[in-house]
Structure formats: structure tokens, C-alpha cells
Length: 207
Image 1 (cartoon, one colour):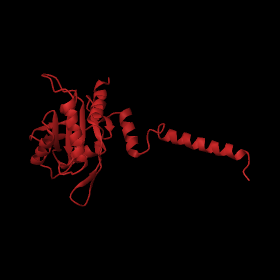
Image 2 (cartoon, one colour; image 1 turned 45 degrees about the vertical axis):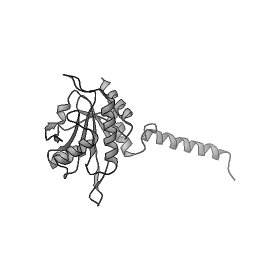
Image 3 (cartoon, one colour; image 1 turned 30 degrees about the vertical axis):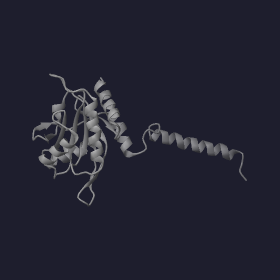
Image 4 (cartoon, helix red, strand yellow; image 1 turned 180 degrees about the horizontal axis):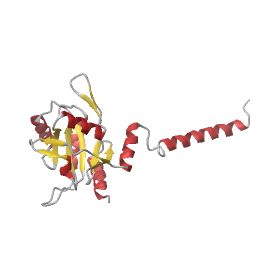
């Protein structure tokens, strides 16, 4: 037979559990480790290495070359048959929806797609760029200058890449925002071009 005090005790236990969950998930904003990293980066932007890269035109550059500008970054491999194509179309939409670079001034948003596939040479990068209308320097399709830099980039951005056993890779589908100070400032879930652009412009407008 249920005592009168049992419902009260049950309610108290449930309330305590919900309060603890809310605390651990920052008011239910975080339910996964990926969500926790998104929130951590939003609160405390992270310094990135000044990685050396080479773009689709064979031009070397570094992440530091974007100083003073906001950059949307994704990680791809050019043979990817699924999510990379979605990200490419999204970046193409951002490119069309944001103003072009003015003479003597940086574009409101620059775009950078970084291949993590060691097999992606300049020709592969160029063809991937042509597929989506990417032209450097506004939208660079790039690869790390060497294996060590590639590993440093993946670690700094928190990108996980796993061979799928069929010649391809399983990897993160996030979009990353680098702020004008060269810091990783946001990690975004894949979204519409308008929402990606709005998120990047919000970072650009932040003090």
C-alpha cells in the first residue's frame, strides 16, 4: 500500500534529478560531447596554429593570412560522395549571398575548405573547387603542407577522421568559424547558407 509521503518523496527525487541534469548540461543546452565542445568554444574562443596550407591554385598561405577577417571553415575530402557535397553546396550559397570583396577591403566572410585526405593533390582540389564555383582567395580549397600540419589542424579543430574501409572516410560534418583575431570562435551544425552566413556575420560584428 502506497503511503501518503511516497508521492512527495518521488516528486523530490525527480526534481533533484532534473536539477542535476540541468546543471550538468548547462540548462539542457548540452546533451553530447560535441554539444559540450560547441558551448566551450562559444564561451572561450580557442587559439589556432598558424598552419601552412596550399590552395587549389598551388598558392601557399597560412591561417594567419586571414587576420582581420572572419572565415567559415569545413573539412572535406574531394572524393566524398555525401556530406562534403552538401557542405560544398552550402558554401556556394554563402558565396552567392554575401557581398564580394571590395577594393582594398576584406570580404565580410571568407570561405576555406580543408582536405584531410593525403591523396588530394592540387588537381583534385582544383576540380572540387570548380564543381562548386570556388575561386581563391575568397574561397580556397586547400590542403596542409605536410602530415604534421594536417594532424595539428585536425586536433585543433576537433575533427575526427576514420577510414571507412572502402577507400573513403567517416568524419565530422561541422562548420567552423574563425574570428578576426584568428581564433576558433564557433562550431556550427550544418545548416542553410543563410543561417551559416548569419552566424559568421554575428561573429564578425562581435567586439
